[in-house]
Image 1: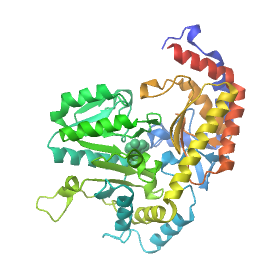
Image 2: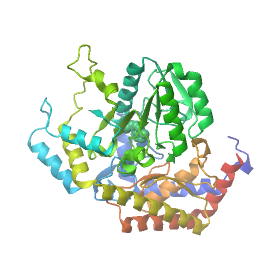
Image 3: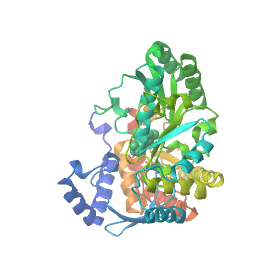
Image 4: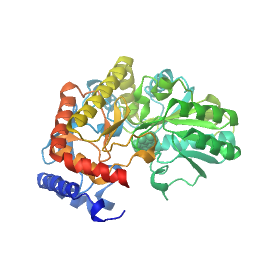
Length: 446
Ligand SMILES: Cc1ncc(COP(=O)(O)O)c(C=O)c1O
């Protein structure tokens, strides 16, 4: 990036310095905690997505829709633990289930009474899931879904999408990662039907799977068009390629996930996050014949063992969540509140005359400080300094949100909390309007 005066937004840089100074001054205990963590963990961090500069606030506790950090600030939690925190911090049914499970012992070394009940509820919500297995994370779920697809098809390659995210070893933003699993990948452009279909045709004989997020989450909450997903369904069916929907994030966006909303039946689906009630969780499932090699009664069965695959606390919390809390009405209510908040935030920015695109579906969305519309990942061009200004500026005003503008609402977020978000944004925009307008103009010119 050139640094000529014309392309430098001095107002933005000055505004960022100002909000950063406020943040640093207000968070001495978090700063000290981070300094201590630096000695034990690279960057003081054990989960990359939680790092932001100058240093992240260390959280002390959460209750309902609120978080409190170790410096004593209270935040409305709009990060929602990157969508795993759908139930909020202190849901009664989840707490009761965890306590009951704790009382009965948590390392039983056998099948427990919860796992089949949770499996049945997942099957009911997602009819494409004929059989499933549990694991410990969304990453593991994707690894297993892709590995089973390779066994099933006896092919080796996997189609992924540019800017997609399926876990730390399956990440395809910025050209991929050297940590990625060594599968042969074919990287296709998201939401671009013709180019993707051409790549499928060219590589059909070696493609075991196409894995897609029905809404790109980490890539900026960019929903796939129904036409794009339908085109993937048709092309994979034609060539016997396993279509994997990564619904680790999106399964909460309607009662039957985005597959239900679009009426498209993938061969395999991966799950994670909130389904474990806020505890460590992953699951993969789909067509019975693809999962059949895992049946341990069969000669030559494939082993999929994981000490904590059926960990009692997760199974109990997950079952309580789906059976007692996340009814169809609750899912619909949460996502319609999300649609309303998206609209109100966009209106707040429009009223302030600041360019803002809100992308996403229902209760999962992303704020992009730019006027250019966003249909595919490459369209997201918000200035990183603008993102920093908004995130730290909101944190300073008691609203906790991810640096990249990502918002995941919990069931605990009500009208009061939504109003708090809009008020904080309005205040921030009135203070930094000029800097954000200039940032948009600079990004558009590049
Ligand atoms: C779409 C998607 N797939 C997979 C994962 C990985 O899940 P986990 O962090 O549980 O390994 C994530 C996590 O953010 C995700 O958003």
